[in-house]
Amino acid sequence: MAELEATAPALRPRIDALLSIKMTLVGVLLAIDAQWIWAMDFVFDPVSAIKVTVVVSGLAFMSWFYAARRPVERLQVLCAETAVLLAFSAAAFVLSVLVISDNMPLIDDRLIAFDAALGFDWRAYVEFVNARPWLGQLSSMVYVTSLSQVALTILALGLLGRTRRLQHFVTAVMLGALVCILVSALLPAAGALGTIRPPADFMAMNQPIVDLAYKQAFFDIRDGASRLISLEQPQGLIAFPSYHCTLSVLIVMTFWRVRIWFWPVLALNVAVILSTPVDGGHHLADALAGILVAVFAWRMADKLATAVEGRLAVEAIA
View 1: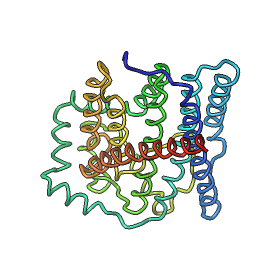
View 2: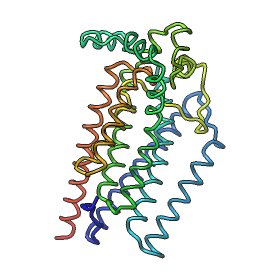
View 3: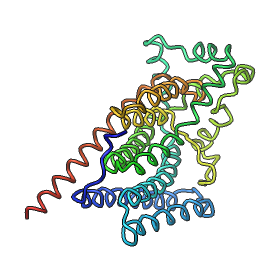
């Protein structure tokens, strides 16, 4: 990665401005979550937030330390962006639970029809994997790598001094999550697994990461049976669009034109996308929508950075 750049001093205002926008967004989400929980019959487990609060506070302190006491810009940005993403993830998870409770009509019938029009049969696809135990194990192994890949991507970009790309990636990840939550609020779906509900022997053949017991949390929130929100074991409850696929595409785009790394990253994330119907219980439409969300989020992150740079240029002239 010889082409990786160090952050020039001139980029400092840009870094601070983008970070400030993200922190403001986190604050807005927390306010929405708190107001929604207060207005409805939800109960939030404050103890579950202690670990996140401690980690975010520790990273914020390290960011301040590397900015004020021992200036190392790449470490300061790494700690700051990680802290803001963790805080955002907690707030976004709570919001994803709250929007499910709106109990809007499910659109799974239309998604199944869309898949059929493309020639995709979820049950046949999963049966193909079930008939090959090694393929089922491989599917589960790659499916659970998404969050680890996000963490490693942030760490690699930070340590290598690619602060501009690091900020862009985190911005796109946050925007992608917001779009997925908004779409799922307006067009909720239970996913192929939650809709088709295959028999127990069918599920036992492979034992996917997301099973019917996992999916039941989605239905319990919709019908009011579950009203406790805890950060202790957050679950990915959004089926349409697939946030797994959004993350995979964003990671691939981040490593575009980065020699050595790109092709292994691409291969792994193609495998993740292929695993989503099996281990995530997704429609094909979920995966395709997740890919589109990633492209949109990447472009919006571009536009945001350009707007910030334009504003800073005007202020510098003035």
